[in-house]
Length: 173
Image (cartoon, rainbow, N blue to C red):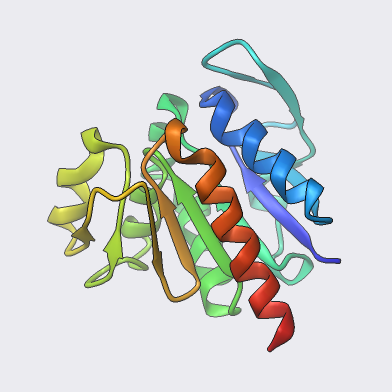
């Protein structure tokens, strides 16, 4: 079974988005690896915590079948992070499933991966997506090829289930 790289901010990631996504991926049999801009303990906006196992800069897409960016207000710091954008582009170019939820779809848009495609995000970031040529839909979850976007914590379960379906489909190709 393949590994899924899950990227979260070191502080103020959205707990539900990280923990529900990881739980469902692992229940489906996928191994998850948490990455951030630091290694060690990282804390969510609701007080939950986990450990970042590797730095985003150390991640190599060839080791994974999917890359997922978790939202929450801490993820805004990753919007302009060139390392995160390069990783997203490398994952896309390598044919991996790529996901982003809440405010994190802005990272994918800034990497040029959502232009002229349907996508969703937390409503506060909708104008940013539109300004980059993204077809913002406002749906709970949106799929454009191998790219899944979710609009926030309420969409975490559906977002994760959609990722799992796409990863599974990729494995059958």
